[in-house]
Length: 205
Image 1 (cartoon, rainbow, N blue to C red):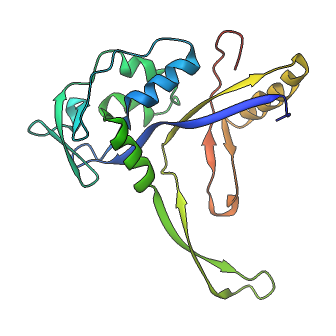
Image 2: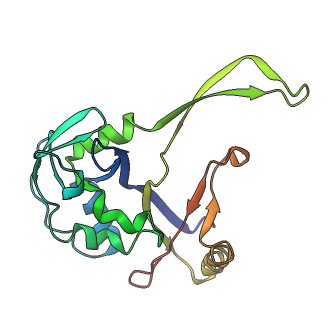
């Protein structure tokens, strides 16, 4: 993108392991408020939450509790009204994300931060020497990766009309590739495959 274009991106919904329902997409008041700000619309009304409390859809709850990763949360009730609708029009149109309403939980800002910081996938890798085609001696490293089905949202603002040409290029590439694009390195091992969906808000993207 050109230097006159401003972008920012952050995690809005993060998938974690759940004892019931296989996994849960967790959100928090802060992530929803930031998303509301970028979308130019009010956030759903959000209740106060302690760290070991949560609101969750019934499919994730057993005996009034929900287990996310190694933590047991007391469920204070069903998901507050409006959160599912607030997110639904942002997610990809595919069978997995169509089940968003079966896998959604609201946790505190602090627990959301913990899950994002400590439950990413960590993969041990090696480096291949380009000349010999074998493993470099002593080159063993860990790589931290965002889990699949992580929902990243952000805003793209264009300051000058000429910059819209870059946006046309991006939308054209997305249209040609079913909204899929590869970001970052490690393309050869299948990382960085991202589904991008653009929404226009008040004359901006």
